[in-house]
Length: 480
View 1 (cartoon, helix red, strand yellow):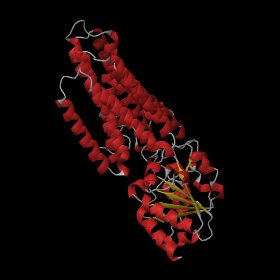
View 2 (tube, one colour; view 1 turned 90 degrees about the horizontal axis):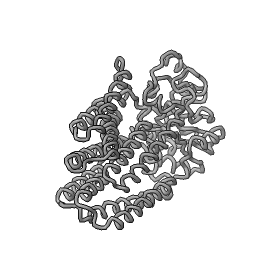
View 3 (cartoon, rainbow, N blue to C red; view 1 turned 180 degrees about the vertical axis):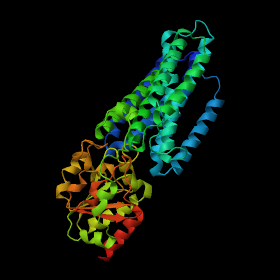
View 4 (tube, rainbow, N blue to C red; view 1 turned 45 degrees about the vertical axis):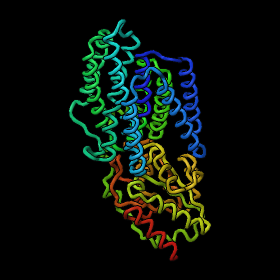
């Protein structure tokens, strides 16, 4: 919504002329420096809050100088937009639970894409009817805004829906010749973009271009399953930045070009990091299938030696434990038990036990999902260890508690080259002296395969809702 304000304001300014272009660009430069420095501060949890504040300051400067420009002929609609946007943002901030943050990020990505193609459309209608007409840069940027913005808007909507499971299931949706249809649709969109660029006055083509891009966004995301959603969220975030950058070229707005490029580049880098964490290529995520391979052993065979346990039995494991590692997964988010996790952590530490957290890069539904939930419960950042660091400690760990995780701790990734998750880096929970898995059932993760960890000799299953299981476990530790 903030980028929308810059876009709308600058479009009006271009129409009437800029009063002090030097001052405007200087303030934009200061805002851009704020954004760049924000990324550096966000790289560490201790400085992340300052980074957010600095980013807010940069955006306030960018919007403020745009609103002060004499080129704006009417503040009424801008005021209405700011009030509605601020009200919607405040409502979401106060009502959306932390467990639904991935869905909210997806929605916000979509807003960015939608704002970009709408602003580019409005600018096209204005410029196409005025002399000397739009130039080549303008038309190329407009076409890119329509394509990227449309794909981002509808793709983000589908991603958010699949995460929340409102209308669509989280599992992949496939139909015959789907990739062929996607390729044909992409070719049609490319032809429409060429026609729009070569015939600037055919503004109706832009409408058709956006509509087909919206359809393409839906078709590109529906075959992607929930296991890949962290990567998709990152990729769509990158798309929203690229759409904003393209719109910056439409408006000749340096601020939009810089801010959009920063978002686009950071999203692409994060996407690459997430793909590496899953041992998969970006092409495989976007165009491949994930999960559902039933060629391996059946669940009945794998789980034949599963040992169910009770809170009292698990509590006894802590009597002589020196180090406990908690490995959270999406199940922790679903049961909203992060505060119970904190209570268990405090209780064990009061007994002299070292408690650490092993965070897999793709645990949850977006990058950093587990870190955010644990931070919400006031768990210290220095207790949260990345995958490589915690793996080096697990062989000297007395108890590893797997809380709602599945594929990210499945040792079959190391042992079966035919597995859907073969080669995917995992947290080596099975190397701890004792593993306790807190899970509702033995149902598979999004990869659709059984997890032999659950039936390992050193593993105990504590079945039940994560929050209730932890509350019972805390009570058992206190009684012991």
